[in-house]
Length: 219
Image (cartoon, rainbow, N blue to C red; front, top):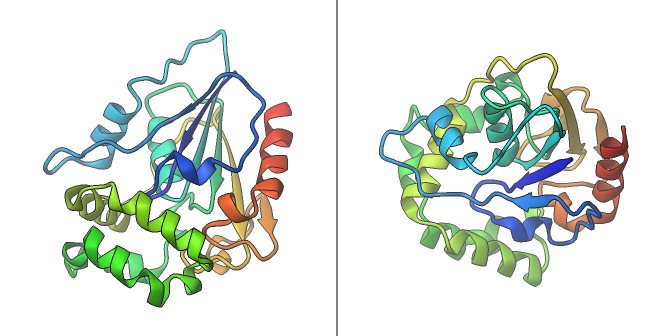
């Protein structure tokens, strides 16, 4: 079995740093710079070049937030046995209204790393970045990305429509009941709900998330 982990928008593999995955074949896929006017399908193909799938081994993608969305796109052109979504969505119906209006109103143009890093102290606690350590980690991860990537990612999220995923690909959704980014009231019935879990729960509730992942990998 090979396991690939994809972080959320603006993050990197450190968001998974508190997970304790025992499998040796664990790889992290971090974001690459988008090409001008590149759509999510072409971007996903470039991002997934190192994912080698064949009939002899199972491939599992674990995606946080936007990483979960891209995981679903990857499953359209590579054989993926299971996708585990963490704090993510599996259809456009689960996307909050505030994300849907970003691209039509060109609000992604306002999304820069300097603005995001400098304002997190005002909105961070509401979106699950509560402690100084969590906010510093958030700022460091976002600060390493370009404005081009951040704006592309937000625009791409805004216009995303879920693809037709092959039926043999199993999708498992783990949501937090306190997630303000992708509220559980829009998701309906995820496979697992973590009490008190917010959008940063893969880091803050790593022990609970870790157990769910191990249970799913054994199935």
